[in-house]
Amino acid sequence: MPAQRLRGGRELILQVSALVLVRDRRVLMVRARGRDVLYLPGGKVEPGESAVQAVVREAREETSLTFTPDDVDEFAVVTEPAHGQEPGTVVAMTLFVARTPGVLDTARPVASAEVDEVEWVTAADADRCPPAGIETLRLLVRAGLLD
Image (tube, rainbow, N blue to C red; front, side, top):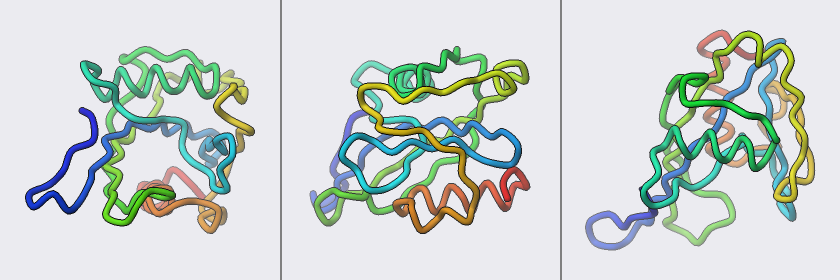
């Protein structure tokens, strides 16, 4: 679902999907071209696209990792102020956890044309993340998936 305004037209909600790929108690994050913070691989849900279709597409575009909708499970939705957007913009980020053991062990993410770097991080890297990333790290620690 594309961005939408809430009642009163004051808040803009950006619907995005993000991949949670955990290996060795670290999660994969990317630094988008020209950005100063780390994000989970992901992006906006395009019109006519489901949230899971968006995460599969974005993972491939940003990291060259190939997943199918059957390779991921919805984990949570994080709603936080959107980093780098005008005030009142909120991101509603649907998190999908990759769950295919063979893929997790052998995945070799590569930065794409949209991404300057890929990095495996822990909760100690929260100061390098926008609000939605910080909340995601908290959720992953609470779930026992991340150090």
